Image (cartoon, rainbow, N blue to C red; front, side, top):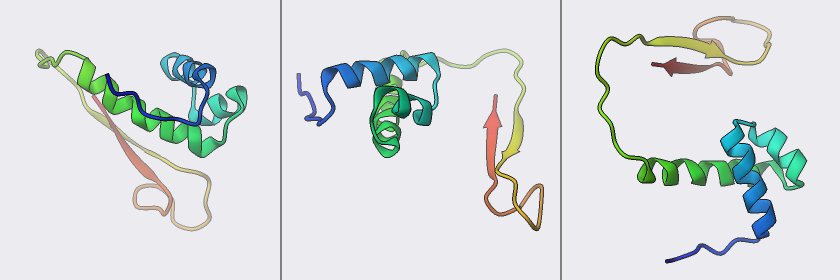
Length: 92
């Protein structure tokens, strides 16, 4: 098995995985574990594709509902849909 080299100690890696599974934000995990924010973000981003590859694929069936929301900080100027800095998030 190929194991990627990392400057994070095994303890730091396991703590970041614990926080990822618990649903913590990368910012909170970085502060608690004692690593840089960008390190935690990159670690979380590398975990997501690994999980997708390991999970069994499944087909959606039955009735469903989709929704969207705009998320973003408080900004001067245009507000709502189309405002600068907002991110649109879709949920199913």
